Length: 119
Image (tube, rainbow, N blue to C red; front, side, top):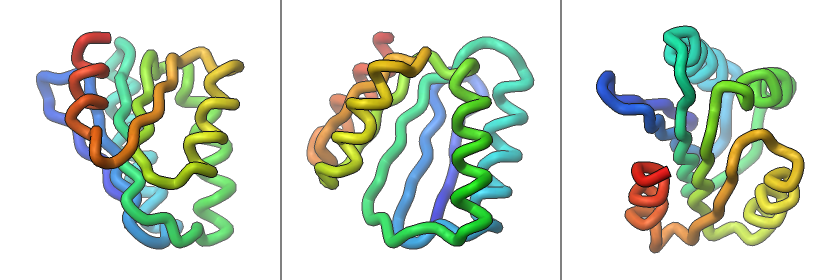
């Protein structure tokens, strides 16, 4: 499951990963996020990875293409996960990303939200 939410009056959007990501999930999230990016301005993104059980192949390739393209429209990313391998990837990608990326343990999700609001 993959979901995307953003309140109309906020620059912060949240993506939740909980299980396997399907192609249909990816299409829905890409459409919603693209609509917000098309409005202009920069988004701040909280990615809450509760459990990751992989991705359908079509979803994986869309994620890579869209992820790289949308980074121009994202100023900050808070990755919230207990998976050390995901934190390591985010820390490495953060060195070359135009967005500021910071990782948080799941127990500190409120701290991640506060960090994004203040950014």
